Image (tube, rainbow, N blue to C red; front, top):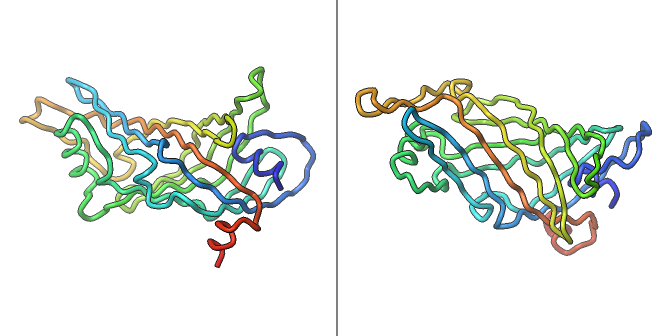
Length: 212
């Protein structure tokens, strides 16, 4: 079970045999995790971000199954509060909340479906995979495949990735400000850095309490 746990978080594919393995483990997302939205207008760029301490679900249990280089996950949907994003550009933040209809849709949802692990390269402490995710914005869900990297230091595991999306995929129209002088690009980049602790021991007090 410990080997599978490390495989999932670090994408360490230790063997290529066709063996099914299953495990449940506890994930505790750290406050220094972050989710960032980077966008541009015809005049400037802007950044919206929030830290891990604002995530609505920071500690949870994930069930996982492994077949060769694919890790299939369940019970891992993450809910993100739209109004917890911050920006030094207050106008961009205001327009963002208006764009995503924050009053009617106060949250985003991200669900991680599975990883497809790539062979390890020269750097043995850094692993790569393609992650399949479902992203839900304003009630509309789209699926993306995102290249991600994973590394670890001590008991902390870091998962990083970025994806370029078109807001029109979610039925959203890029806003136009100041009588057309400022036009927002329909493409945005979503960057995430998830720092977490993991524990595969079902007998830990935290895990036992969470399963009841």
